[in-house]
Length: 478
Image (spheres, rainbow, N blue to C red):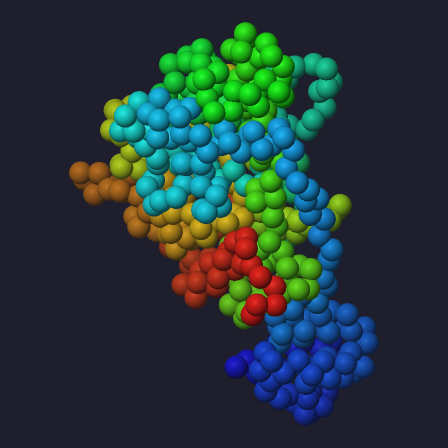
């Protein structure tokens, strides 16, 4: 139970009648809404110049309610089109893989926020389902708002194909913008932004859906013709002809393009991919209350001197009222430790360097981006069991400890060599260590400094992150 005086804002110095303030102090529980309202009004009368902030602070602290509710703009819900219904069939079709056991839904489970259904760091695939992938599949949720990949402000002519190498070269002399929670997002002049997969190599849901079909450690088809043959002799042959015409099977590339477009339509139209039904969404709208721990976690999340999470994972609704996406869509080099459980990492000299390789090759020469990976949304992050591009961590506690201790106690994060030296940033070649973010809090601290967050702070931040899980029922409890 929290004393009221710990929740009240400090009065102005020139109005400092301490005896009057002490007479106002009573203990109230979170359920004492009526008492809280009376006290808030009394405070407003005593200090009218602080009235809006005072009342809002008191209501928020004592009831867990959002004192400034907003109206969020959610996508309209309608019956799925024939195209989307076909895409849904394709999404769950295991016969489209070489093994006959892998579908889109195998790695993007609807029951797990369209992410992996297990705690493996990466998933298995290939012709016999024995080959290990090298990156954990991101969630497919909310990708309908993902912008196209670009570098710097969008100033190119819409009719001109982007030349990312030229954009990168033009941006190479500009200092990296610092990211601070609560401040306006930095202009993305220096880092890549947008795109899908961990390295942004696909711009559309259609292109993203096509990728796993040919990946040798995923669905592992040998050629486009092999996939087209499976469609031609599959259970929805007639639907393909009805939607795309009787000659659709005469052109394998066109067939695959249209089929993946259907998958994209399923992801766009089905509300389960973008429900915006988390407790935090309802709190923003004034339809749910946060617990004391959740509210404190939100404050820490947004505090530029503490967790500074909102520096990259934006927590406020957009100007047009769309719910917050909890990502700035940009790329960061975080220097997470190497994951020895991945088969690819047992190859000497192998490094996954994100934007500059190995999966995308068009920016391989732009070494200022080596080690950078897409900042994912934190929506439904509490449902995941593999974090970062290499799945090295398996809980939010581990993730938060990484942020908290990476710079001040690296020996607790990274392995040691034979001489006992800490192998800091061990999953990126030393010549690219300058790319790693050491400017943004909490990475701006040095060895010997106090950590940005206490264990209790981390516990509360994780409590808040759990409010970002979809499926909350407003009115079913607080």
